[in-house]
Structure formats: C-alpha cells, structure tokens
Image (cartoon, rainbow, N blue to C red; front, side):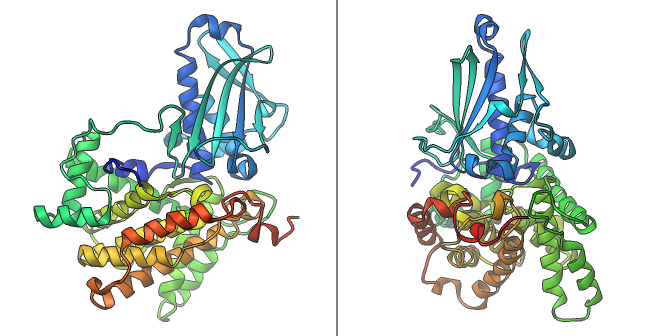
Length: 458
C-alpha cells in the first residue's frame, strides 16, 4: 500500500479527453506533450545534431495500441495537442495514410514524424508498470536523449525517476489513506463527506469552493453531452469489427415502453451504451475513472438528473462520494486494465457509481462504503480481453452491466444495516490488488486470451 496520504484531485480522476482508452490515448498523448516540452528546453546543439524522433511502445500499449489509437495520440501530443482541447475528428484522421508525415517543431528544427517512427515492440521490457513508452531523439541511428514514461490508468502518467514524488509539501487538513481513516476523520471533526473532500481539494489545487463546484458542474455537462451525442449517433463504430451502435435503438425502445417496469433499466442501459459508444468512436468523454469505463458514471448521473430530478447540489455531493472511492482504489490498488484487468476499470466505476447513488439518496458513510464494497466484490477477477484490441466487445456492454450492478449494490447496501456488512471496502480493495497481481498478463488488456480469441474479425 502507498504510505503517503491521498492527494489526488477530483479533476485528475475525472478528466476530459478523446476516447477510446485513457491509458492508451490520453496517457500517451500527455507523455508525448511532456517529451516535446523537454525537447524544447534541451541545449540547442543537441537538437541541431538530431535527425529524427522515435517512439517505442511496450506492454499492452504495444499489444493493443493500434486498436486503441495510441499511435495517433502520440503524434498529437508531439504536435502540441492536449487531451482537453483535442478535435476528435482530426485525431481519428491521423495516420490514415502511411506515407503522410507530421511536422514536430522544436526550436529551429522540424522533425517529420510518421508511422515508421512509432514502434510496437513485442519483446518484454523491464519496467515497474505494464504500459511503458520510450521517446528517443536520434542522430544517425544513435540516441541523443530519451525519456521513459508509464501510463498507469485513467490517463495518469509517471516519468521515470519521478515515481515517488514527495507529496508531503501539500498540507492536507484531513489526511487519510483508507476508508477506515476517512470515516475516523469524518467522525472526529463532525464533517460531511462533501465538506471533507472539498477542504482537501482546496488544499491540493488552491481553488475556491465556487470554482471547484463550477468545474464539477462542467464535468457533469461533458458527461451528459457524451450521452446525448451517443443517443443521436447511429451507424457502425470505427475498426474492423464493424460493430453497430445500439444506444439509439434502446433509447427509442425505452421511450415506447415508458409505462413498463422494464423501461427504467432500458433507459439506464441506453445512457451507458451511448457514452461508451462515443468513447469507442474516439469522441470526447470523461474518464470515470478510465475511458474504457466512461459509460458507467455518465449513465448513472444522467439517470439521476433526468429521472430522479436531483439538484445540482445533490449531484455534486454524489460526485464527491464517487471520487472518494476512486481515490481509494487508485491509491491502494490500481484503476488500470493493464494492471488489474477489467475489475480495475468497470469494477471501480461500478463501486464509484454505487457510492454516488447512495450519497445522492442521503445515506450514511457506512452505507456508501457498503455499496462500494459490493460493487467491487462482484467484479473481482473480471478480465480485460477486448476483441481486436478495440474498446468495443465486451467493453461497451460492460459499462451498462457495471451501472446496473452499481444500482443493485446501492439497493443491497441500503436494504439492511450497513454496519452488518462483513467485508470492508479496505479489505476488498486489498483482495482486488492481490487478484490483479495473480492474474495472467494474457487477460490484462493484451487481447491475447479469453473473449479476444472467441471471434474472427472480418
């Protein structure tokens, strides 16, 4: 377990960017942008003698990077693009023609970057994380300067040598590493969960409560825009699978069954599929906590707003509960499919969604914990084995299933006495980490086993 207190910002957990994968798209784009900035600060003589930039991908970045658009994301980052402001249409158009190159400007030099400069390495590479990308500035085949980055899930990246960044300088008013500690701080200081999380967020980011609330509202707006786009867009998703969008059909079906007891679930399924299909198409989504799981929270929050008619204040409080659970998983296990399998992505999103619903309904922190624990418990061992390396099968439907499980976890947690729950959230997160460690690499975002081998692409 990480021995430092949690200092993650809600705006790092929930990030706006292009799909289809936060670890394969947003993370590599951020790493490429960082490398570009470092090149611009090198001594001029170093850049003058170089003739090319090469990028080497390892782990699942290599195994499924083509299907996830990792090469396009890296080109975009080296061109100076940022995830939040990326034009998804322009991004999807990159590298369509193998002969086309892109000008990477560093000082007075321009390097032509093309598909041949991005290497999907199959050999094993010794690094502390599953997803590794190495950038090299090269002259006559010899490396002049290089940087190594790790994409650790949810769009978070680490640069080699910065794995253990000291967070002690951040003066948190309420330090915690576990749910047990979080509950103790709440009880000792007689705080609501939202009050504690807001106080820590202010300490981490320096933003005012008004600014933080406005940014959370914007996150929800981005999520719901993805849902609405997905409910309108029809046709086939990109890639060789030729998977047809299903969300608009489900939505129309739900509207036609408005008086039926099934319509509630069909609406929820359509909202989750809509956001997830937008992600699969490379559209702008919000990591929640990853792009591969970016249909669960958007679907549930859309349902909460338009069916339960919760206020902005209630939705924000729910987002803080979701963030608290996401922080705990990221801090004590991982939200990366390459590290944990799909339980790290959909499992975490489902637990976050269950916490969101429980908070919005006005239940205690004990009920929130129980709901989140149930959400993770019933995703333990779930593999990440996407067909063709695309975030489509089984990923899209898993978002809908994760949201339904989140709703059921909320119901189960609030049906009795939460204090009677036998397994704590901290305990199930430990189990999650151990399960991910024991899981074969074949089942962790590499498309080398499981469902990935069950269908022949045509």
